[in-house]
Amino acid sequence: MTTRRIRSAAAAAAFAAGVTACSAPGGGTGDGEAEAAGSVVIGVGSEPDTLSPLLGYGKDGNSKIFDGLLARDTDLKLKPALATALPKIADGGRTYTYTLRDGVKFSDGEPLTAEDVVYTYRTVLDAKTNNTARSELDAIKDVRADGDDTVVFTLEYPYAPFAARTVLPIVPEHVAGKQDPNTGDFNTKPVGTGPYVLTNWSKGEKLAFKANPHYWGGKPAVKSFTMAVIADDNVRATRLRSGDLDGAVLPPNLAATFEKDDGRRTYRAKSYDFRAVTLPTAGKVTGDRAIRQALDAAVDRQAMVDKILDGAGRPAYGPLPLDDPAYARGIERPRDLATAERVLDDAGWKPGSGGIRAKDGQRASFTLYYPSGDKVRQDHALAYASDAKKAGIEVKVEGATWEVIEPRMKSDAVLAGFGSVGDPDFGLYTLLHSSLAGDGFNNMAHYDNPAVDEALDAGRRSQDRKVRGAAYEKIQQALVENPGYTFLTHIDHLYVLADRWDGLTTQLEPHEHGFASGPWWNIEDWQPKK
Image (cartoon, rainbow, N blue to C red; front, side):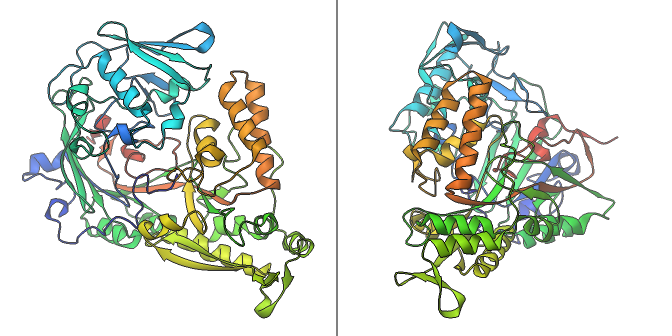
């Protein structure tokens, strides 16, 4: 999915220079030295569209407002959260039973019950709920409460990674159940069981949080924190340098400017986050398979890693990074302009005016959009256009807001970002399955390949590792032969923070980062340095 699932930096307004809540490190919403010492202000490039898990917020974990039945540790291993233990699995992988932790309360003081869990999952699965991640829970046939503290999931088919899907945050039925899940004020005034509660949300500026007095996991040392929404990378770096922020997510070139700063520390997280160009099959030019194949051959991925990412990343030859266990060995392919030219020649795209190829009166020219303010995507787009031109394809690069880009996604190319951790199914199904074409940011390229659909379904429905491995290898090979995207780079995430807290770590991160992922993924566990 794109960063607009957590709203693109281009779509969020730049953080106002005069916001007093972020006037000094640790200043958050505090008004005294003691309170400031327990506060943190973090600069991020985007904000969520909603804070309701019913609409997709926090579905992969790490929400500070909510908890799921399970959570992930630093190494992404599943651990109990609202549940007392990992699930009991029966009936050949078709039944999952969870027992709830005693004494858990929502931030309004009301107790958590099994009915809250049932309500959450049933509402997400309801077709009337505007949750474009619903397909991720496709395996669920039924969810029911067995008393106040036991929840039983019955699956349509054995789904190997199902337990990892139960990091989904649980919402209180006594609050959310009284509202329309699509339009109710729970979307902006959430109530959860997590370590923090939202105290203020100024759209496009900041989200402020304070410790939840009812939190079952103990009192965090960080008493409050603020996420300052600063869409522009350069502005975010400037505010960090001036001392207005304690930390920020930054692109590699800007993070590098803080390397010699003794008072700050840089954190680098490996990720599944990749940049790719969507090549819609409905496009007059991108709909031609030869064009897509030629672009795949013409692009210089390693140069993008070296020059745009300053080495903080890896070439992307598909949606899975090279070190993923399911990565298909042998699909690596260096830049090959000769192959690109041959493919275009064979398909009837002949050199024309200005060196741009044409076929049947149609110039090999199309527009590539990127979200304004995202320097890394802009640089990728410009490098891509430069590579394409050498093969005789004109790519016209334009920056725009997501409000402008979204209506054009079906027919125009977009410099997009995707990537999910935990299981190949989590990222590949929504990226490629034809049934999800045009469903929000799912399958943005409208990719339609029956063989890939079949392999995606096989990988999702089998518990046999060999069957699943063969399915995902088949998918990656198919994307080389018939690309719907040009995969460019897998990006490392870089963060710079004031070095005054212990307990900071990073996880292997998904595409969506900054707001949920980052060294602050476990901010409730931080302790002040002695």
